[in-house]
Length: 172
Image (cartoon, rainbow, N blue to C red; front, top):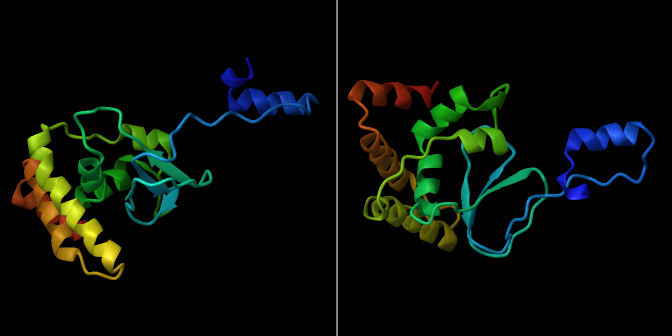
């Protein structure tokens, strides 16, 4: 009965003097499996891949795999791209220039569904970036990130003019 209560009900109960009120339960999440993580607030789209036991407080959000046909590293490539930054900046939630990356805006991000074969090139580039960063966190992966951006532009069949707008917005 308590687990179905929502946060607002809990605050109201506390105001009514029901000091024994419990906090809203956290969603069940396997903190030890494959996941994407992102800070609650960030100036850029900063999503990371994690496949080890890792726990964090409420200022970190987790994205887990819902669809067995969509690989998390493919989603990671999309989420960290320049196109998706622009989407988050204009369609997501912001606090000033900071992106607010919590459940509502994250759940509304459009992820283009493509077959596993099409995802492979994205996943391979992500694996290459992860490998370089694992061996040297200061590795320059700019060229790999640019390849991912180009793949995202191709995925959405963007025109040269569209790409110029996206690229120019990154330097504004």
